[in-house]
Length: 264
Image (tube, rainbow, N blue to C red; front, side, top):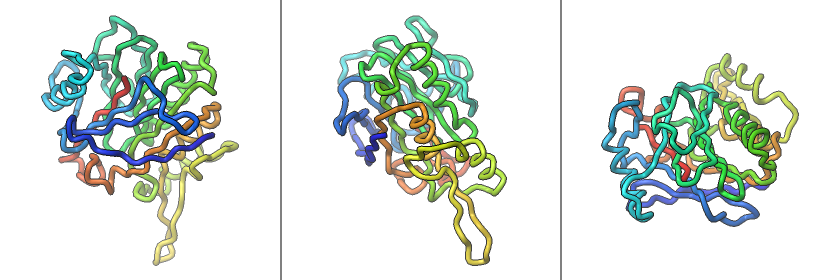
């Protein structure tokens, strides 16, 4: 697997970040990845309700593309491994799920994140795209999406490009032993490769106990590699330590900001 680490560069015009898919070491034209920053406001999606922060952010993205309104599709997220396929004419507000895929031109797909990992997928042609919300409960959702790419859309794994966006990274994602054990059993015990290393790490504490840390990016990189994905870009910025990014763990449950991640 070809690995391409990158850091986010803030765009003041739309208060967020744009970053490309990469193949053979070069940005690939066509569908790209977008993410709001914390200063764009809370991007919470509630079916049937309008969020002015989302409206303003989407308008800023639409302007340079000469669009009056950005055709953004969203789902009510439930920390699952469920995905939906969006087609021309699909309702903008989808069912409960945590991933969206499409083969239709001109559609934007979105999920919200705040420490969980946004996973972006596309094929080399740019026709097939997906965006996924992968937290510790939903890790494995990328397998569902890849199965659709490969088995239903007949895309070769060599032609699938992936980006792992910013999330709570391994050094910050401390969990209890039981959660670490469950995560390791499902995602860290199969044969390699593990391009980003182990999915669970332990650290010795001064009192002789151990602390356990999950690595969402490592788990997803392992799953992508198992499916034969060749090109993977990995964000090096952590939502907990980077003040430009929203974080449930840093901000707390009463005040955290959701970011919206999109693929066009």
